[in-house]
Amino acid sequence: MVTCRWFPKKGKKTILHFWTTWCPSCKMELPEFEQIVKENQSDVDILTVNLLGAEQSKHAVAQFVKTEGLHSRSY
Image (cartoon, rainbow, N blue to C red):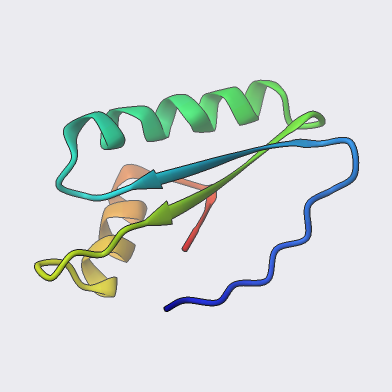
């Protein structure tokens, strides 16, 4: 179980996206969500949640986020 503290900003819409590194469509969506947020910074925020499987490690997920150049908060 992961506990995170997140305080949404009043008046801002939030996209909550669940993903894994082994899901092709999940990975394709991540840059699209980041682009939406970039184009609508004052109205939209994104929070991504990686669903770690038995074959994944936190290091592998962190490396994927870094390699892909993702900037959204990921838990």
